[in-house]
Image 1: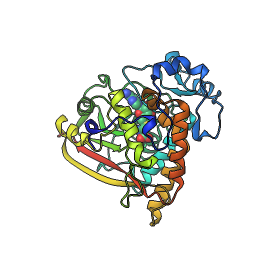
Image 2: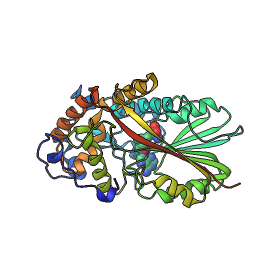
Image 3: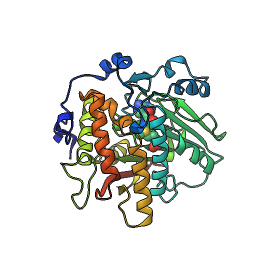
Length: 357
Ligand SMILES: C[S@@+](CC[C@H](N)C(=O)[O-])C[C@H]1O[C@@H](n2cnc3c(N)ncnc32)[C@H](O)[C@@H]1O
């Protein structure tokens, strides 16, 4: 469904949810001390007070302001960096989910880290929106002679990394400061809902790549589907996409990157050639019969269900949901995620192309 066609979703429209309220993320920031914390998997109701200390120790070189996280309903979010606005929390619960997702996406590529047909002699690689940095670290391990840079707005990467890997904190939607023709490979994964102007991002990547260098853009849809109607409008999973699409619209950062073909259009417009695309269904849950799909489905379920609130609270607040309403909906989602009767999947799309020689 195109983002323009999405109806407004509120808490009252989610299956069996509570009435919607009004509010903004800003209100929530101000009210943070008065609100209950909403934590990973709802297993613990205590905020992880050790997080800031750990982060401060491992990123001692970072300026104070980068560690000045915003707090919403007991969860932390990136500090103000450029014009960035990312919907996920940046605390332990979400970071563990990102680590599991990296494992899933690697399994999906049969252990490979990319679709781009890289040759030997890769010297400089950039991972845009690197998250917890596992892709950059794995790539650095596989290519010890390449220098790998990962960029993110949150300093959530480990301190101990291969000597050829480093991380920078920056907003990738601002004009890039890398000299032109610097990189052999630029990797961009799972930035749906984070980017206002994809064409501008791909144009920056085109300029920063050496002639003959490659770009790879790997994005996911936020909407669950099923081939047997087990996921439908009346299920929490069926409503999940609407929630995120509405939230993305509020933020001015589309969640329908895959559905709208944004990657291929932007990559071709930027001037890349030899553009190819791979679309695939990502199973969710333990329902698939073949072993590989079941393993992928179970890891996805684990990654998402252990911290539904960390993915939903920011947008929920923008959409006028109270934290309790997010909790109720999250509990329904987790129940459906665990059910073998819900045979859900979502679409992913990888597009890659080469800067002309
Ligand atoms: C869903 S995570 C994906 C992480 C990683 N690319 C992966 O695939 O494992 C999205 C990441 O993009 C980062 N991000 C969002 N907007 C950004 C921006 N404007 N500049 C830099 N990083 C950004 C977030 O902080 C988050 O770590």
